Image (cartoon, rainbow, N blue to C red):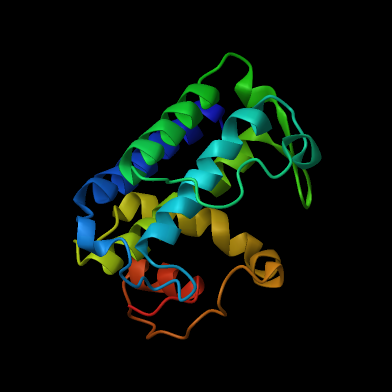
Length: 190
């Protein structure tokens, strides 16, 4: 998978999530999401956390070198600005010359940059649905992006489940649409 194609997907996924962040009203930051441990604010904080890691990871830094500088509340008093700033840094980092040739040092091993960015893109797609549900927005995902995430995630199903980061898959009807099947794969009920 070429880095340029992954960057295009990353841009699409983050643009959709960004549109949803802009829709959050002041009284919705504490609203529940399908991620039982996260309200809207914690969910957005999670994606800010992920975005903040992109620049150092694409510069070849290790988790130990980065340390705990991105732990805790990254949203502060102005969550939208914190989100926009984190995304701007991530978007700049992925477009740096040579970013696609980097090896990213993740907790489970060294990974080519394009695979790391693909995983992050998948996170933004699935969490867009979570955020939309949390704020009562349109929760339809781009069918092309849904298929792309499914193509990436399914072959890694055993590893994803072993990570403990996802609820177990949910059984759905065989005639369920692609989005419902993908969400069920990640343990989400529609």
